[in-house]
Image (cartoon, rainbow, N blue to C red; front, side, top):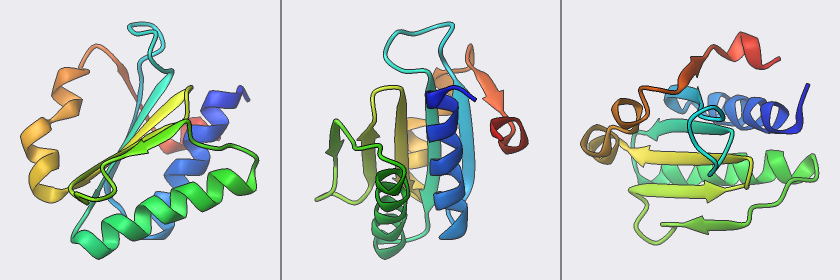
Length: 117
C-alpha cells in the first residue's frame, strides 16, 4: 500500500472511531498536484469536531506522520489538516453543506474505505 493511501486509511479509521459523520475519501491524484486524497468528515458539534481533529492527529502521529499545518482550530467550523499527501477536512454540519467540497471535486474518485485497506 502506498503511503498516501495508508495515511487516508488511518485518518478514516480515526474519524470513524470517534463517530465522525458522512466520512468521504476522494482520490484527487489524477486531477490535482496539491494532494493525493481528501478525507472529509462532519462533527455534530464543536466538541466532537475537536475530538475528531485530536483523534486523527494522534493516530497519524503514532504511525510517524506529522501535519505540515493545521488551520481553523479556533473557529471549530472547518478544520483543515495538511499532511502533504492527504488533506483532511473536518466540518461542522452547516459549513459542510455550505462549502460542499464533494461537489467541487466531482472529477475526483470517491474511494470506499474497504479499498483503502
